[in-house]
Image 1: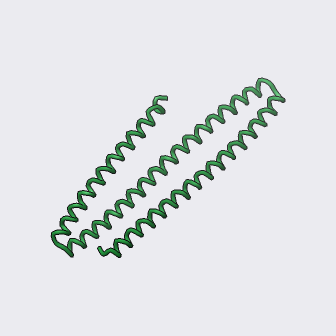
Image 2: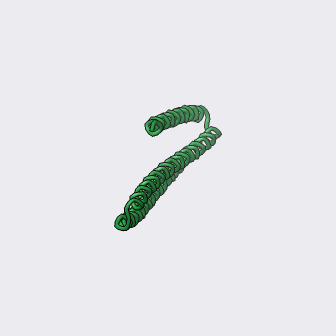
Image 3: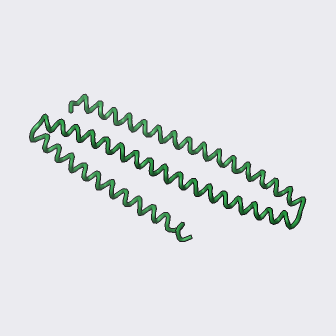
Length: 166
């Protein structure tokens, strides 16, 4: 691969990385805006429910207290559901991000493999040595990814253990 091709390749990699960073930033901002909107809506709902309960309290006795308790239980249930949905969405985003990272790595490795194959056709001993070196590097990277995946899974299991105990 000529120096110009290497330079172009590095530039492409930088641009791809930049695009990925911008996309992740945009997703974070959208998520933040959605959370703020959800919180505002929840606050409004709760304020309306409080006002309703307050008015009901002024009107009645036992029935109002029962309705108050019922409304509180409903609020708690809805809050729990929102939290559950949020955790589910986060897990799905994490999974999607990991898949995108794996796809990008796979694409990069395929490009490198094709590059080595072309070099192999062009050259002799040096190309074979570079090929062997690149294969060892690929193996190391694959082992590292596997190790990180195992650690991440065990961390997730540890993080989920206290919730499972509840």
